[in-house]
Image (tube, rainbow, N blue to C red; front, side, top):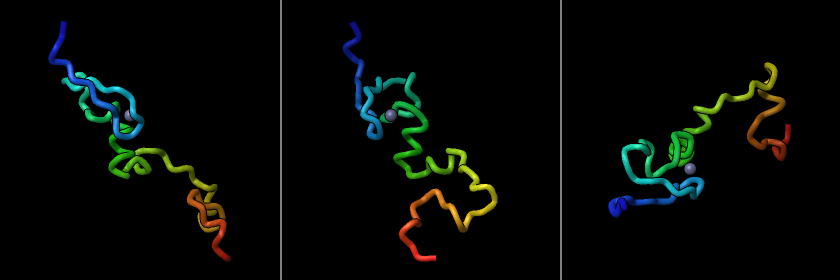
Length: 67
Ligand SMILES: [Zn+2]
């Protein structure tokens, strides 16, 4: 029995994470969740190049803005 085992929920995706050295990103379940919480995941994620035309199609909703 491992009574010392502590399990927390990942703040980002709510998955159970065992609080030990096997979980280097605790309380997050993975590096991705950690980055998401830090608001830096967009940096990690490869941004989709809008085929050279950035001003036309943006990945963040600028659809409502007038041209
Ligand atoms: Zn997670």
